[in-house]
Image 1: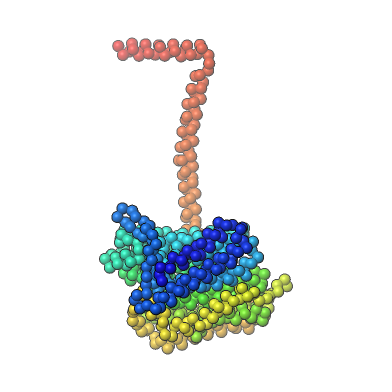
Image 2 (image 1 turned 45 degrees about the vertical axis):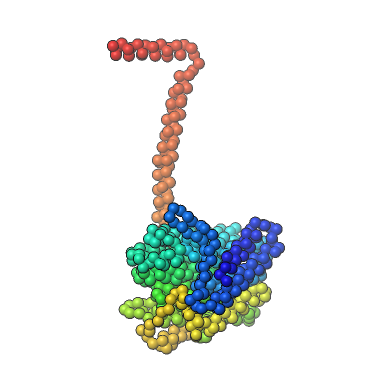
Length: 625
């Protein structure tokens, strides 16, 4: 069945090409065509996975050769697709959740005059993301990597007539380029170290490479992952990316693109296992980001930005798990899959609320919506329970496994990583409960011109499907460890050590922290009166509202020096480049002016010049003799 893998990318890519090339001709049928092609890609993916399930686990992976690509001297690299358990897990997530978001967008973007172009960009993104996860080499992965970056830029800035939205798109694009430099340099180092850039060749060369080279490659790959997955210190773009239409936030900035960094780290596990130092940095970055996102999420009043902070934090959990080594790879991907369902569902729920509230995003102006938007309330509530990790919802089976894995090890690591993950679960319960209660419960704080109502079926049906996944997906895959066994041929089989605290104790502590966080939010944002205007707050609150001054730090450490260097370069260019060119011009002009005065048209002047010349020649001959 792997021979069909090319269709996975070709179908949505065809949709993007048709909608963009046909232009206004496709306005009437373009969105429907894009949605059909996305679902067709999912159907092909499902057929491939069914075929894989009928084979022995070790024989499920397949390779599809596409064409000869790079042949330069002794270096040869063909383009191909790697169809294995890891890539197909992502393919199913991208195509299924992506197709649901296409359906949702039919209702959400129904009145937008440029909806055809929006759906073209959605198809382009799906195609690029599928190429990224199906590529059989780092170089082809880089093509998909850049493709999702381009599609993200186009979709964030879709309403670019708004200067703030255009600036947000530019910010996301520029910050991601920093990470892309890391991936480009990592691929270059692979050429230098292994002479190969395909996954099989690189993995085969890892045992013979030096730890220093592997560490450098691993850190560069981590830099790439930080940019694409909004991890510390390249996380500043994600909150601003909420400027795009809400379906974009659900597809790209919750379920798919921001998880590409986690995929890259897990796919490169052989490199990181050969470079323990780089692997430790991955875990540290994940721990910092999960705490950072949780703190920022506590202070956001914009419903989409609060969800963005949550996404950043949850991907921090995934990155922490990936950095724990073999014990955490499967848990990282498992949480990535469950998170794709419940977070996409909550983003679509946020879009449904905005649809009902005249596009307002300030939760302080919401409240009491559970009585008028029951479907949105129930579906969002299931996602809320899932992200809290309340049993038996999906987050309980995936996030709690990461917390347990973080407590495995020796020395300081289990205590630092484990406690960070544990406390993060409590803070997550607080800020996500804050969001849920401020939006759906408490006193109605609507303005007079708002008349909330439930969204159309084209929007609520995808929300219901994702809510079912939020409730049942973890229950279907978690208790029997079926997902872990599914990934073993790729990530390897590893016996999991025992945590430094007994598992029942960890489960009890996690649930206690979650209940405490939710209870605190209940008291402050349901029982108590929520001010319509945010109070000034403490310094910590103000810092969290400003993303812990991340933009200010970036301005100080990066933007300011770069602008200063640009100014100095411009001044140098004016002095040396323009000055030198102007000087030569003035010299030529002066010489021409002198010669012009000699050519005055008077015969007596020419005769005098000739006489002077003759005298000068005779004088020189006399002197020489």
